[in-house]
Length: 256
Image (spheres, rainbow, N blue to C red):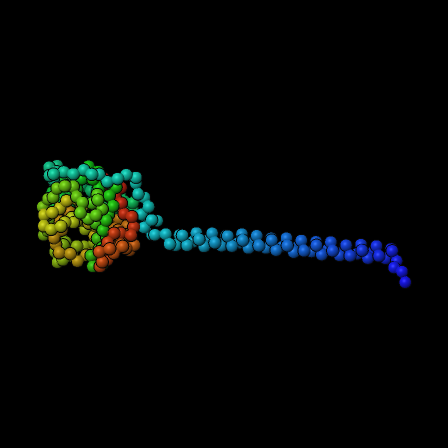
């Protein structure tokens, strides 16, 4: 029996239509798959960016965030062969502000009991000797002090001169404790004072061998924060370079 030509044409048309419908379905499937992939990539990118940002924030050193106000400039290289001539009024009241990268620390200087020390400190401050210097040492075990005043930040620097100890019989330091809030001179032995000083942020067990020449009147909370952030412990026993970047941007002195 012979085939119907009309029926054959209709069959071919139906077959072509089925093929086109199958291609269309495939195109839609591919498009949906691509859209889902793009969405996943976008969402993944957002999650990565958020987690990355969060990680960066959480791992950023507290020192960077807390002590980020470092003024541009470099420490001086000035040196003097002799201590400065006495120029302060020992009956006057001298105050100083350490403008640091972590905030301001206020000091009251004891010109009456430690005149040579205060005279040297005021002279060096007026000369800009402390400007842009790093506080190079932090102790966090038994002794709680932040040591500053060395333009080389090595612990060996100074102004080129030395002068004698003063006021080692101060009542506050008798008994082997330097109270929190004490401002005192660092030294390498008797009568070897130069420019390095330390700020006591907690009561510290120290023999009365370091000239106390003032008190901390404000900013003790800043020093405690620095203490909590710790040091690199390079010298062991909680003693080393502060983890925070502690820089004295400048020192101002006022006479009253």
